[in-house]
Length: 424
Image (tube, rainbow, N blue to C red; front, side, top):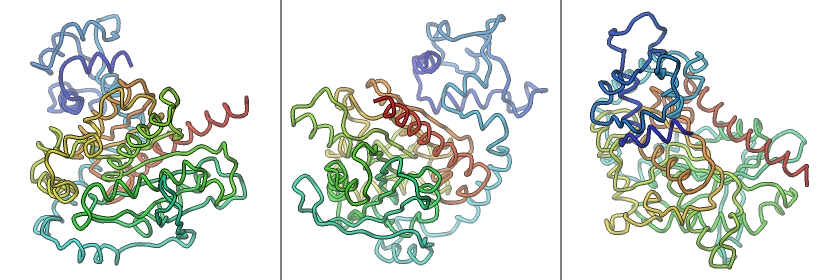
């Protein structure tokens, strides 16, 4: 953590730091080391590589070897690159780049998201859904704090006859415009429920542009309130101490963070400002946390790797056309104060380096920790938006490593929670 803090103090977004450090030696200037992962940085080299981003005070804080050097691998791992990147578990970067290049070539000449009629595009996407037999749909009429909101969930229950270790409320992605609770991620969520022995609930929420902010957020908050009141525990017959987990993917990550902000305010207004919210853990996967656009979104440009800059701007216009509201934490959670984020649950953040939204995740991770909360960050080199979850890297070696890491993070929390509860 000390090294990560020092790197942050050097005055640049972590994604820019990663790029500069990673690029060092890749042109063959420094040979003889595998995959460019073990070059060493002395002060002179660090100054030359980072240029104006170098900060001498921060450099002095970095742990060094006897020759006053820091390894490239150490720098990148402390900035979030998982060990799987260096031990070969996630495959080679050359293979991952080849998959990306093929995806970009295939996308050339195809319509952009903003060229499509949302309703027709939704129907076309639904034709490709793969529905799992273990998924079922539940409808309730007692959602929200008022317990009179109608909600529909897609649900998965672990198939083994063992008590569920947790209840995981997940908000799906799709730019607030596309996607469904049922069909979009069925096979992956079935695998997750069985691997982690958790009950997974994915609520339907209204879509933009027909239903702009705050419609989706209102629906997701109503689902969270329903879970907080113990209705999910009762419905599935699990004990009341079973932990509540919450998460979101892409636009769903935005909704997850915004729901936690709303529920935190609700909790504090009921006279419990020093107690954590009922949510024990958050899983935030390549989310969008500043609807105005972070630097990495602006830099991404017209690259046809899942989403272009203009497509992300289109999704933002659909979800929240009011530019002033985009400055509020409910729309752009990165605008929240540290006080608002105080007592947030422990969290795991995941993103790829080839994702336009990398800065969103890295900056949100930093803010999460700066607010006094525990969090981990996994950044996958060559990973585009959706890595490990959907798209071209859903099932590649890189994608599987990413998804396994997400499961590992959640499993580690559940193990820790279980040990704690057994001591009571």
